[in-house]
Image 1 (tube, helix red, strand yellow):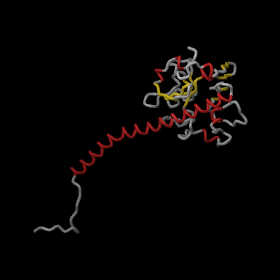
Image 2: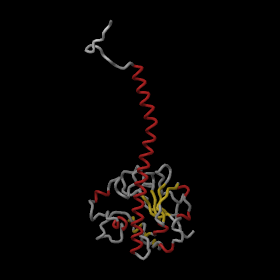
Image 3: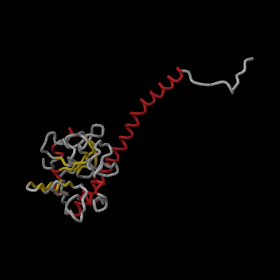
Image 4: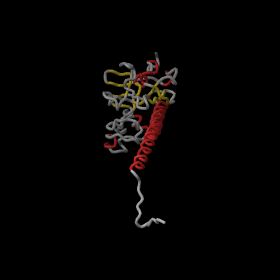
Amino acid sequence: MLRVNPATSKMGFTLIELLTVIAIISILAAILLPTLKSIRESANQAKCVANLRMMGQAIALYCAENKGDYPLAINNSWSAFTPVDPARYPNYGVLTTLLDYSKDKFSSNTFKQWDADHYCNCPSSNNLSSYRDYALNVEVMGFNGGNNIDLGNKTINIIDPAKIILAGDNAADQPPYKSRTYFDLNKWPYAQNLGERHQGKCNLLFADYHIESQKPSDIKAEQINPFL
């Protein structure tokens, strides 16, 4: 009877067995990768929604403390969520100041790079050079551009707040709109400064502070200008 000596025998895979294992791994990877990508995007979208919710809370707080006036979306080229030193620039960067994220507490270098934990950065954005991945509605919140001034609206003037957009994902990762922190009705399409980084949709904060997703191309003028 033939006996196998365990000390001298060698066990191994044949070429066919190795190819079979590789094929199975490839099939599993092809099945799992889209699922993992979808899970990651769902997590990113949830973080983006949380960012907009925080922004909504800051806007609501500002309105409550200023007799219903909205903060200016743009003030002499400064966005409402540009980090500043509030002691030196009390009327600028009001949203970041309200959220305790301003240059009096953080090094200026903090704001020169994209940071996934920063509430002004959308984690789905491909833009790694800006801390601002969101845009504010100039038609509602107003602006101060030197000789061109529109002080915006009061909350009491918004007849249907559930229809009016206050803020949303900008197109910071979609050239040529890298520095767009606002949107209005001056250009077609109306929402060209809004991004579509969440599976072709944009996360939007409305004037009643609810959040929903919508394709930028589907946004209507009456969702931006409350008086249309």
